[in-house]
Amino acid sequence: MSLEQQISKGIMEAMKAKDTVRLSALRNAKKYIIEAKTAGPEIAELPDADVLKIISKLAKQGADSAAIFTEQNRADLASEELAQVAVYQEFLPKQLTPEELTAEVKAVIAEVGATSMKEMGKVMGVASKKLAGRADGKDISAKVKELLS
Image 1 (cartoon, rainbow, N blue to C red):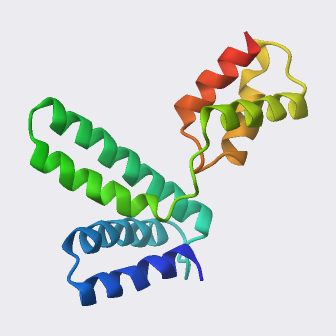
Image 2: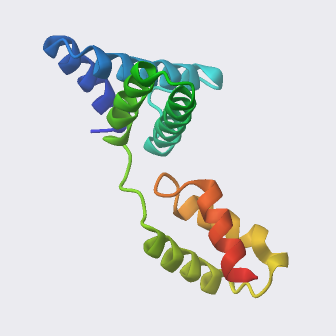
């Protein structure tokens, strides 16, 4: 079952369970999936990689919003955002630990044969594709800089 189908099934289950937070989060994800499908040439189903990008983006936005709400002493809004982020994270692959990220980036550097910061672009291209959904781009970039410098 594709991620898009899992989200649609999750919407139905959330409606039956009257789980408003889950329903809201999944409907939001479904909205972005539909927009992505209709933006370009008409496609029946979005590939899982694209759905992962959408869900990852929504989870990051939710976490950022929750941080802002917390700074502004709006715990009620922050907790709502974090609850939706938790729903998104159910569909994302497990995030890499710092140690796992270091090992993966070292492997990519060896694969590409990079020896200096001049080759960071090549490393980032391969690493971003290989680690998509499992690590944030900023974290990957920071680790590449750390290992190449």
